[in-house]
Length: 324
Image (cartoon, rainbow, N blue to C red):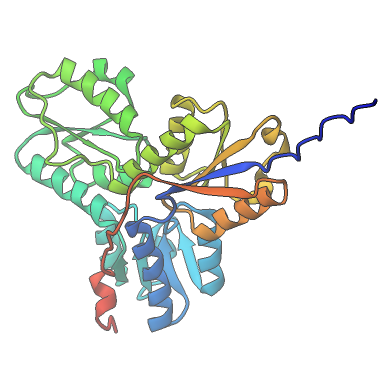
């Protein structure tokens, strides 16, 4: 009597854990909509100082509609309309725009504006302001410009030993809104050890969307062999999410702008992929990655929800009236 071999089981489909929340935050949504609304109301060209948000796809899409991105105000023709990006600008930029008789639309994220106001208030009270952030980032440049004589940039814990202040009883920390929460608090703790009377801002400066996306990516890292973050390399919050995933235990984590940038070798031995996106990346790019993964057998998509977001911001007030 012969026995037949046991049936072989069919290969199991790969699994994708899709983070929620992910992608565009309220500030990015407001800024992009502001450019589109300005183009609709006044027609192209609409000039935008710096990238409206740090995402290659978004910038290219708006360029096709008639937005012109410039680095400096003197690149904008006199009398034209210029829109300031979500990252904010220093008061000197507003002054330069006025000198050139430019019509301005300020699409600075309200959460960044909050940090600007905190900087002004503490400077008026003659505090030394220790701004935690990355040198050269547009948001840091804008915030520093609010009170340049009072602000010292702190890149991380290693910078703390070299800080000099005028009065150790009047020192406050502020931060760039798109940093890693864990990284920021490590620096804050080092500052508190150095300056026991250090004042904290009224509320944490790390924005709600950054915190929520980092919490979600930590959850993905616990249950996946690979985390893919959709976002651009110049997007601070997207880069931080990759770092957070790795620090949370993900064996591998990578940042991509588009699905075609994924290296198929990343999938070797991977049964579960975690997928999320930075606060400046639209969901159409995530959909492209989902399709790319499905074509390679990762058909089982499960949403992992760690927070519910309902925050919205009104359009800049300049777009709620006729600028001309």
